[in-house]
Image (cartoon, rainbow over all chains, first blue to last red; front, side, top):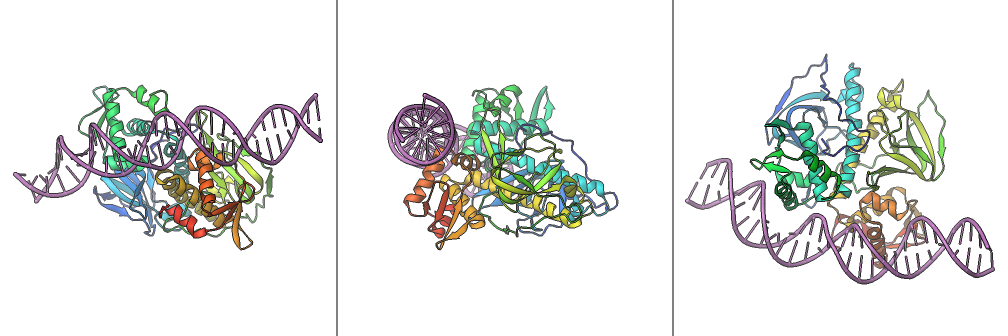
Length: 224
Length: 224
DNA sequence: CGTTACGTTGAAGTACTTCAACCCGGGTGG
DNA sequence: CCACCCGGGTTGAAGTACTTCAACGTAACG
């Protein structure tokens, strides 16, 4: 999940449910904090997230870390390069996963429908990452955090007392590493939105969106 | 082509030559400055670059631009999302291209080999973009430019008088938009490398690498 | 009740951008 | 042939948005 305001020609797309008919592999469960795979592991399975949230991250030589993406329900994770995983993946919240054999990506086995859907997911991934480039490179901290919150709330938020709200399963440091900011800057930006009455913060992990339009405006850099 | 120092588990990979056996589509030529496709166009063909250099870019609402990638020989461009192109693509230098029908990506037609190679290329693309994330987010201007030059010279440079050199077909502004820097910063960084005797600049588009190790060190952030 | 991990806030430092001036080569027109 | 212009490229000076460092707060947990 690349949490970016889609620019043009990007549809959100239905949460396609991938289920192989004949090779009905049982659903897997992953507890928060447990790892699904590590960078360098051989790829045998891809996984579609059914519930929960995953974190995909890479470690740099100098200890810095890049959170590549968050895996939300509907997302497919584990695309191989040279047959290997190129990120670590662990669960931020207890997750249920539908395993899909790598052969389904390569030739679909006998399931052409699944093959096509996986391919589609991979292509979407490329497009979403391209959106994310702009985010990382050319957006200010306010624009980044506003985009992140808007999209997350739009896609995975819930309605509560007439407002949308979202439960963030990841620590501030993860948001920072995903948006390429320092944790302090993420914090200050949250505080700024709060001060302005754009969001309310219940416990620190629960964000209530009070002014959706204002947040979207900020994410686009319209004034600030 | 995402010009990033590969971190771990990334092999450069051979320049695979994709040629469909039975559907032997003739090679296409594209003159410098001409567009191959625009963002939003329907994808009918993918293209493997045989010679020349392509530029893939996206325009933002506010007029800013993100250069997504450069297409060098061996690279495949044009992966669709929702059946559409999601970048503009034009030629920086006269190019020869091998068109590949989109059906080859989807089910390979009757050419399983081609299908597998295209898939492999797409997966590599995802991995390379993930590398690029770190570049954009967490690297300094010096590290970015040093990475860019190192990789470009390593992959596409030529030997001249005992030194590697490279001809840059793109203006400084393109490098800036690719690395998410201002043109001025790119300029100053080139100048700095020049002052230090790490590179020599023939005409402004031709860079001669004098101290390869120094450049690699800079790209990793070892001292500066 | 102390420890630990994360969150928040402030103050200082800095790497980059922005703005502005100037340079330089290449093309066009007088 | 020179004059002029025009689009990149380069360099300097000033501004700023972010990071870094440091202190403190706070909730969870043994």
